[in-house]
Amino acid sequence: MREFPVPHGIYVVTDVLLPPGRTHVAIARAAVAGGARILQLRDKEAPDEALREPAQEIRRLTRAAGVLFVINDRLELARAVGADGVHLGQSDLPARRARESWPEGILGITVGEADDARRAEADGADYLGLGPIFATQTKGDAGPAVGLAAIPRVRAASRLPIVAIGGIHLGNVAQIAAAGAAWAAVVSAVVCAPDMEAATRALAAAFAAGERGAGTAARA
Image 1: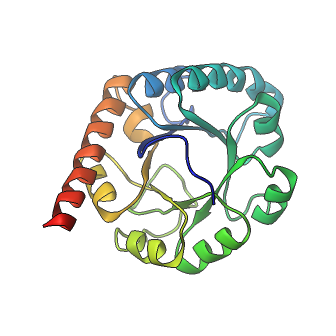
Image 2: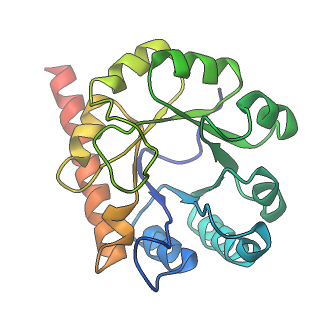
């Protein structure tokens, strides 16, 4: 397990299928300007070659802003463009193989419960993508919601930091922070917003408030 070079907060996942006319780079630029801590490029349709140029531009944007940049699933593309790491789902490249192939890369693994988390940690993951916390329409194969209570359960099972994902929006993101997740991953709450930068900024403020509230309660 490594120390992360970015503070807790908002983790924005790009998706160009939800909002017509928006690009990965436009989403990334707005998210970075709005205070996102981590940016994930996710595209299940386009070939690697079509994503290389936008990924390189996102790498430049995120590096200049001190934002962590990971790419979903595509380990070789992530390495080629100098991304910080890769995020893998349960049906993607096995975590252990990814770790052996890219020892220095940050490796995020999607998990649903404590047993998944323990396996991911043993396989060399650096963080856990836990979810879906709430019901979501963004990812059709996401499965049933695991609920906020899954966050403390998984924290008890693994030392790895948690990125909570699934159905997160401005109205519930503070609960994610209060439950103990290090980052809240959002898709539609940013990419479908009329003003993506403002949406990211509002989410970041709400997450920080939830984290402060949890700290105050713990000290009381």
